[in-house]
Image (cartoon, rainbow over all chains, first blue to last red; front, side, top):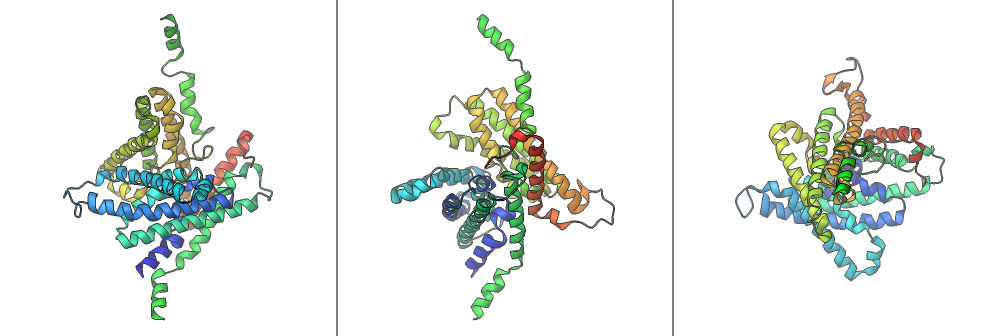
Length: 207
Length: 215
């Protein structure tokens, strides 16, 4: 049940983009059409779902003072190792997709390598550490956080496609409007903060 | 020999070009509102002025010194692995910042939590390394990093100023608005940062028509 709780929490209530502003750069740059937004969103779900559990294991077995195999505190290496894992995972994912499905690879194009510097990936790993998740939790958090990011970028891309036909003040076109819309979407998502995932799953279990 | 002498005379330590490097990113080529880089890691810290100031100092430090180091190493780094090399330079600097902040100001360190670490993936730092430091001399790169870091900090401080003033009625924790002021909770929420930034962009682009998006 914890799995569902954390998934719902990270996807809707504590959305990485709308509540923490993570991954803003690619979110603003790639949200001009729904099709590319879907591609990038899926890639982010994939990479987040893989890197967070891997980084959890690295932190648990190599870095954290009490549990690692060396017996000394190596947490100061955290940033360097995490970013190295992310960079190499993205590279790996890129090669796998290229071999398995060239069509998907072509449609994702340059967005795949860009994921390395997407703050939501590193941010996810750092949140995983500061919230002290265990392995199962961190898998749920990776998938849920990725799904939340996917939702946010697809929504804003859909709105931006429509808003092109509206009469926006020239100085506000493009970037300014994207910021305003993100703010409004953040407020809308705030309405979901009343959800208590624990109560939801408890009710489901009672049935 | 004569030629090189003339060249050196043309490049003083702090001439017009260098000034332009330093001043341009402050407004006309601001990393956040014009280049749209580095929005990610920072807006969440702007609900109060103090953490924003700490964040600004951290980013200025990382940006300036990563630019300097990369520029010094630019002829040694092989092109194929340059991204990884840049990431390692940045990650090392950020680790230095993190550890010193942890030592000197633990409460702020707690408050900023993951956002200090996220300077690594701050696109400003990476973007300046790619666009500038890989092809320019150390001193110029240092100034460019300094300018961009400060340009980023200005936006942070402006946003934080309005959010703290209207959200809490205080500045740097000191009461500014009269006691009876009813705090506006909207300003404390993350969405407020977006609105303030949008207004900032609106004003900036109305004043300078060249910046307007065509799409």
